[in-house]
Image 1 (cartoon, each protein chain N blue to C red):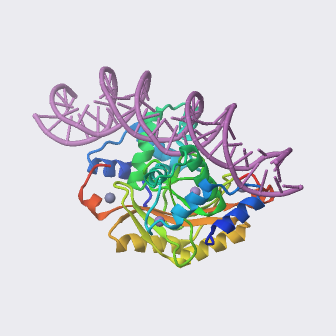
Image 2 (image 1 turned 90 degrees about the vertical axis):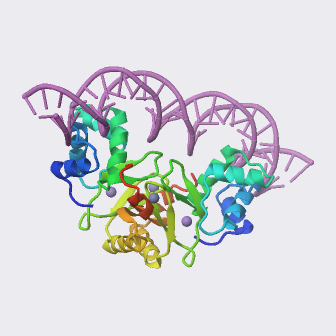
Image 3 (image 1 turned 135 degrees about the vertical axis):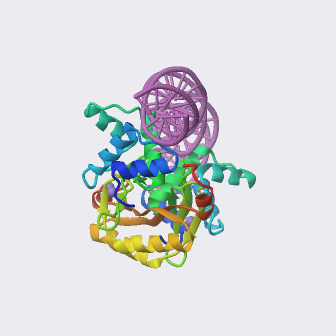
Amino acid sequence: MTAYTTTSLKAELNERGWRLTPQRETILQIFQNLPKGNHLSAEDLYHLLESQGETISLSTIYRTLKLMARMGILRELELAEGHKHYEINQPSPYHHHHLICVRCNKTIEFKNDSILRMGTKTAKKEGYHLLDCQLIIHAVCPACQRALLPI
Amino acid sequence: MTAYTTTSLKAELNERGWRLTPQRETILQIFQNLPKGNHLSAEDLYHLLESQGETISLSTIYRTLKLMARMGILRELELAEGHKHYEINQPSPYHHHHLICVRCNKTIEFKNDSILRMGTKTAKKEGYHLLDCQLIIHAVCPACQRALLPI
DNA sequence: TTTTTAATTGTGTACCATTATCAATAAAGT
DNA sequence: ACTTTATTGATAATGGTACACAATTAAAAA
Ligand SMILES: [Mn+2]
Ligand SMILES: [Mn+2]
Ligand SMILES: [Zn+2]
Ligand SMILES: [Zn+2]
């Protein structure tokens, strides 16, 4: 959960016998420059790149998203739509959580530093190496409460 | 997040114009009697019922799991295996969170009442009706840290 | 700089968890 | 009992994600 640069990404990849590719560098930059509150699915990322004239195959996108999540660079979010979303994983001043309406998928981000602290402590106590810590609140938003019945 | 009985389930279903069926009653009982720490996927539940001589179609199982999660009766858990798991949703003395190894999927449950309190407060502040509040810690377990490299 | 090694990519294909369809069934209210 | 319509079960369809493999290419060695 530290801020990555191209150089530090390359260093960490090489350390594990892996390689820094233009595709990986591009994807990291996309997420680093993504406006706060945006979350990208694999398809989202594919089309965003496409709209910028760059092309990275969907296979590589899926592989890279998974890789970076496993490295702790990206957060994998289940925003209740049948597919995963990703965002950059940043430490305390930017770290946040998600309040999700299970009916319309409206998502609100909120901050709470003590949750990250407690998560960090729990992981440490069990000897786990922390990658991501996210509180997910499943709920029904005001609008969906008023529009009654439909599940 | 209250304890359901067959009667209260029927009441809440009927109130919405829905029906209590034997299948729904059976599935609720399965989850209520499930030992602490167990999480069932749709397939798990299907085979568990099968082993008890009861049969509920996979379609109905998927529909019921989704329905009960939307009602706040069950918690929908993403335990990093490509399919969802479910457990009963209970209030404070039993409420807990999950620490998950992203490599081997080993999962540890832990309690922390202040997280539920903060989640409840956040939902209320935004006018959301709370269904579930779960802290997910993605990490690498001690065993997987020693077995280096593989993603 | 050139060579060597093997990680990575892109194309195509396969998988499989979950949802949709729809006729038959059966809760719930009258 | 009768009516209404939510629900079920069997089947097919969907779609997100992973896999296979030959062609590239990053990184280390020479
Ligand atoms: Mn976010
Ligand atoms: Mn649990
Ligand atoms: Zn909503
Ligand atoms: Zn592990």
